[in-house]
Length: 102
Image 1 (cartoon, rainbow, N blue to C red):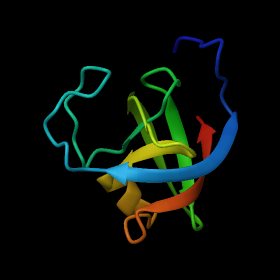
Image 2 (cartoon, one colour):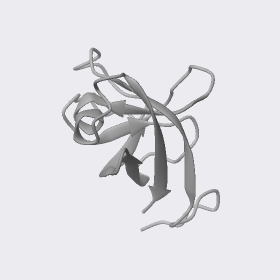
Image 3 (cartoon, rainbow, N blue to C red):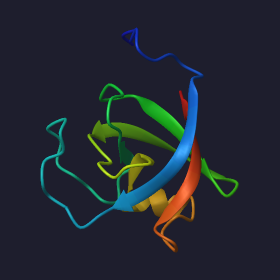
Image 4 (cartoon, rainbow, N blue to C red):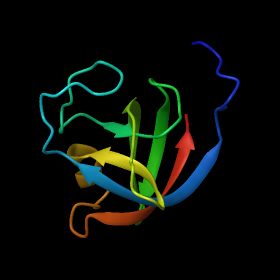
């Protein structure tokens, strides 16, 4: 596993996360096809392939960063629909999360 100077395992951040899922089939910023059921997330600057343990309302899921975003002020992550469903975020659409680099 390559070392990234900008981010290290165990680093945590928190903030508002949203989710997206209507872009199925398009290419993500990393070049992968977007799959709304995959456990993926978009982040503005983390390296593609970074794994994050995302916790919301006591439920956690591990996602892989494969896209850029969210581009809405105040948001820290955009989760795929599948990942959002896994942590119970789909009801309100936006929620506070804590993410830990794995």
